[in-house]
Length: 110
Length: 113
Image (cartoon, rainbow over all chains, first blue to last red; front, side, top):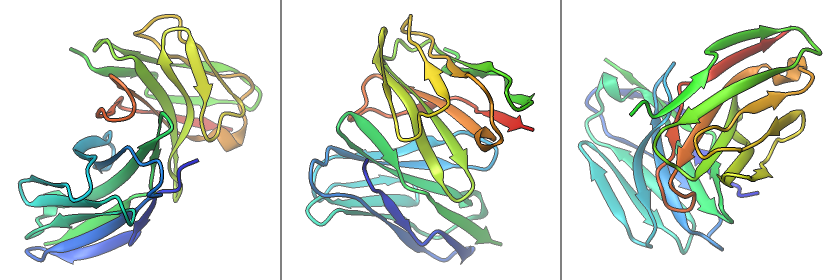
């Protein structure tokens, strides 16, 4: 079983502020790291997939980095907006499986 | 493309009843999986399949059966429902598992009384 941990579990952010959170995963037998955005009452939707150490991906105001040697990934939200409120799921792939973290629940306060 | 579809959207069962949650995808994906979502637990893998005729257990398989007779369909069967199986169930698919994006269905909310 892959142990994927995300922190903090939840956070409140003032509109316009930037924020970031962490996903930790086993660095051995690593294959890929996925970030998903999950809005309430909807299905998770893919944001990024990263495989190489040092990878950086960006989609609008959201970006992510990957460190496979130490086993972590950061997700950044720049200038948070109310529509960014969601749970951000991190998932690690290895041994033909995809293991999810428990998510970072973000609430943007107008 | 309809993507990944799940039926029913909501179901209430009595303890001991059996039922099948349906999942279908029209993207010709080889990999399909079932997850359950519980408060504070995130998504936990129940069963998965890497292709027609091949299934394997995930993290929490007890009380559930699956089969994969076609590429398109991956039903999840509850043999004898228990209150502990009250959850939201998500089906997902992808071309492969290691690198590809997972496409999720809309979920089935199950309540076992």
